[in-house]
Each structure stands twice: as structure tokens, then as C-alpha cells.
View 1 (cartoon, rainbow, N blue to C red):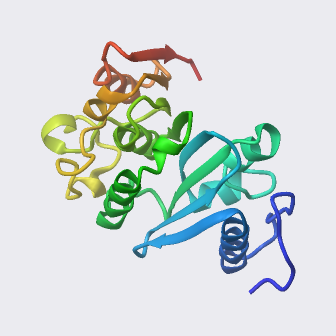
View 2: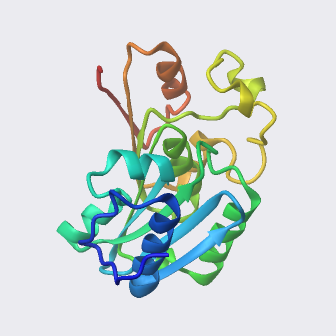
Length: 218
């Protein structure tokens, strides 16, 4: 348990995982809300302006990749004054978990996304999949997905042998096939390295009139 008040300007770099979770909860609860979504996922919301960034991130990624060990969107909160909803996972889960679906269903029912003028969904890898898949909750949103998977349903992508441990995970029910979930988006941008064959094959599945694919080597 941390003893002092923390803010968006506090670095969490040297915190243990439990201290990190306490700090993130404190910041979120002071500026919006925090909610545990089952045992593997968390939602943290900060309300600032009528522009909302929805990001999908792993806890390990946040702690390792940010100089302050913050969720990616907090930089946009500080610099641009955006609102931010962070969906955080314990490891790479592709956010395929019933409590996450229930959470988005509730946001839809409550008209949560309708209160914002602009909504942007963002994620990379498994988070890129989730950004595309859950964007259907906010029709008219924009989506930025870096190296996303379209699905890990082996009946569709049996050629992808990188994530065999996920093959028993359900990718066919709620929010399942990410490319189809983009139909309600205003625009989506899929960024991938064309020299990585499996990433390029997934990117090809996102071919839609409202999707721009950006080939970014390395």
C-alpha cells in the first residue's frame, strides 16, 4: 500500500506491482473511476474533455515501456486534456473474457460513448485486436490498430502458429471477429510491417472500405 497521494505527474517507475495497482486505482478514482473486470482485467477512466481515447494495454507493458510506468493514454490526458478509458490486462489475453463483454454492454446501455464528441480506440498486437473488436460499442469512432490480429480462431487463421495457447479461446462469440466489428467505425488505420508475413496476412483480413492500411517497415 502506498502512503502518499499520487497524481498524473507522479512516476510509478520504482513501485512494486501491488503499489502500482494501488497508485493507478487512486488516480483513476480521483478523476473518474476504477473497476476490476474479473480476475484478469481492469478498467480505469479519467474524465477531462469531450475527446475520449480508449486504449487496450497490458500491465507489464505499461510498467516496462512508459518512462513513468503509466498507461499510454495518460500522456494524452496531460498534454492534450483528453479523457481516457484504459482497459488493462494481466498478460496477453486479447481481452476475450466475459466480464469485459459485460462492461462494454453496460457502457453501451448507459450511453457512455454518446457523451463524447470524438472517440478513438487504440491498441497494439492483442490490444490492436481488442481496439478493433470493441470499437463496435461506439459507432462513428476512429480506430488505430498496430500489428493487430484479426482473430485467433484456428478455423480462420490456422496458419498463425505464434499463439497456439490461445486456440481454445472463443473468438467467435461477442465482439469476436475484429474486421467485422469495424463496420460501424468512421475510419480505421491498421499499421503493420509488410516484411513480417503473419502480420501482413492478418492485415489483409482487415480490408474494408473504411480501413486504411499503413505499411510501416521495421
